[in-house]
Image (cartoon, rainbow over all chains, first blue to last red; front, side, top):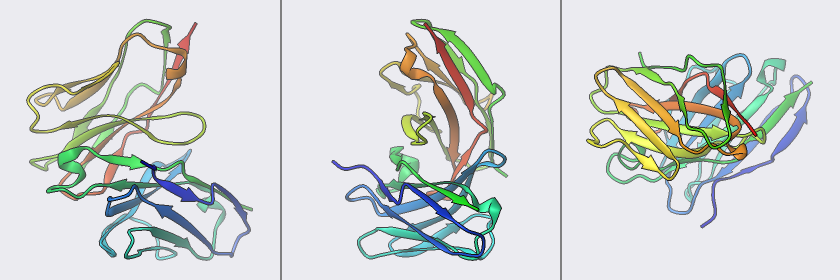
Length: 118
Length: 114
């Protein structure tokens, strides 16, 4: 069974550009969540999607957006990149059964997309 | 507000010995889940173990066990028989009623000595 797949793994952008990251969840998983990891702020929740709808959103500016497709694949987009957006972006998927990950504990991460903004 | 606290920024353990990584949490949600993840230098977050707040028994997964003390709001990870490959960052995380949203601690960097 394939795990969570994130693409691209590494990318370099310059300030002002925009970037799109992709996440393919584990087959059968319908919830996808995104996290930003930086040395200063640690791991912070960005947003979560379930059945193409955003269910939860973290405290990030509107430059950060996402969406989910009917096959549960998700993308996140960061527009007008700033130096502080340099980070490891992690995607996680979970199985929605009853209370979802809260009941099953199934919440698995991809390898991440490492973004460097110059 | 929900919060996870890991008070050990770094720890050393001798190979083949057991080690306990501390985690305390704070939440007002009546039901919640506690997760531990391992993050090697490659960056991938590897799921280790999960404990639901209503689970009566402490969770175990191979060499990993979770010492869950609900009244003290602690969820410590115990790794038995440490191996060199256990050297990594370890994160404790919590999910409350807002399904799909994990709150992470700052992590503990574990180094296993041969």
